[in-house]
Length: 310
Image (cartoon, rainbow, N blue to C red; front, side, top):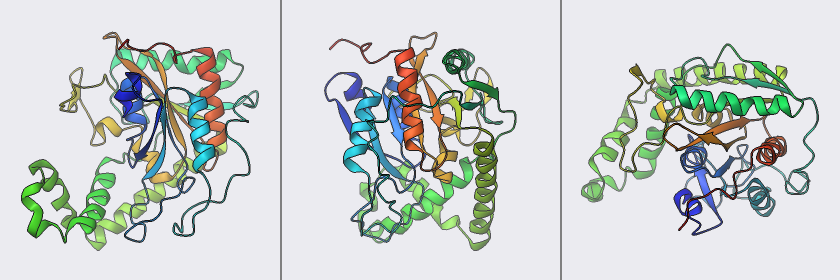
């Protein structure tokens, strides 16, 4: 879908994001992607009582204003989604231009564990400085949250196995081998491992609480390296440095687990001429603030008219 937007085939889509699948494609193609606060756009109807409490749906668009319009059409409570939030009582599109002045903004180039391609780091660092130029206060964040990759992966396949287990005996031959191998790892979930996962998630929650007690917004890269080839693989190392477990989702996964709103804006281009994303993260339920910051950045560094020709 993000490639179709970048190629001017469609103007916007509804995408889903359980570990970065709105923000990562947006970063790879130079689009705008917003992962709403958990519950802001309802899931309904669902075959099962909502299991995966990391996944949301949200807009993937050419511009921030298009995403705000999408949000205005989709937010609000739904009786079949027990986690859905009440309507925020505002129009995201109408408040886009009302970013408060003098925000305190934290900037983390690596969240304490990510391995970032050097020219990607330079592009994101320059993009973060734009907020200082706009009159906000930018501060380097030195400590990061727990690295989420292993926990995120195991809880994801455990829940997916719960959805698919009844189908596997009869339809196993219809699934790809790598997919099957991954899903079957769900049986590794035990009460002990589940408790460990919940403890680390609480550590992440505390880190986020401290972060957003100090800062109004948090900036990071969206993806730590250049978009890989369409057929993969994802990178195991960058410039000779091994990637952590989270890899392509190093910066995006934490905020699925913590339920915070986060967006990816086009920061610029790497030395290879490929798009680089800047992630903007806000306090829970402050989708308005994230969209306002993204819109202000878009005005300072316009990207909406810079696309490949078809």
